[in-house]
Length: 284
Figure 1: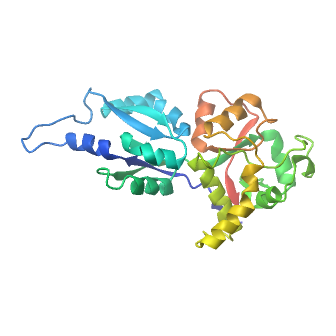
Figure 2: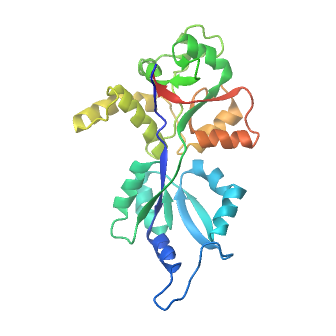
Figure 3: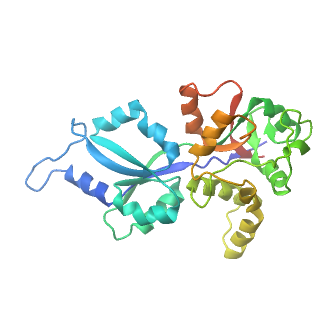
């Protein structure tokens, strides 16, 4: 069975006006002087606007050491909703959004506010944090590829849209609660990552094609909105739901949208146990 991974998490580092100025200052001037050079001990503060999911990576001692070698010391600020972030993006040296589309939006928002350039950094795919005791339940209900351990999101989508509850899943004695089958996500009004997730669902619902008309987009938004509103209170970033997943157990968070890098980092820090499992969302 062929699969196409839905883990589309390409991140772009968006250098804003001040970063352009810093970069220029590191080049030889007309007089032949050299300003700050990469690799010198001097550390230039860099004001960076990015999502909380990237904080652990950027604050890792090894990453900090490598950046310091380049003369860069990031000062991190947590991003929120795009409208507010776009309004204040010019106050930062760099913006690291959650994906290429968001990066392009920032480029447009910063148009005319100085030299702006984009740079690909690395990709961390979207994933779902879940629990090993639930894997047999997913398999019995056709939601899991047993061979690969991938979560069949397109099979789960009709169940979620139908309002299926955990206690309605076949052979579910592990988590038989009267609670809707949903993936816990951050608030899409405040989180680009939440928007990525709903965009993936829209792509699947639209026969694996990107909707290109306003009518199609509005129709999909109407269909998929219950998957957001039925969650109740939502955090503004990925960090909150993942902390609940680690600290409060399966009862609070049976399925949580994450980045692969979050799970890897938490594993490295010894925060996760054998009962925790990461699944990659795919289509059958």
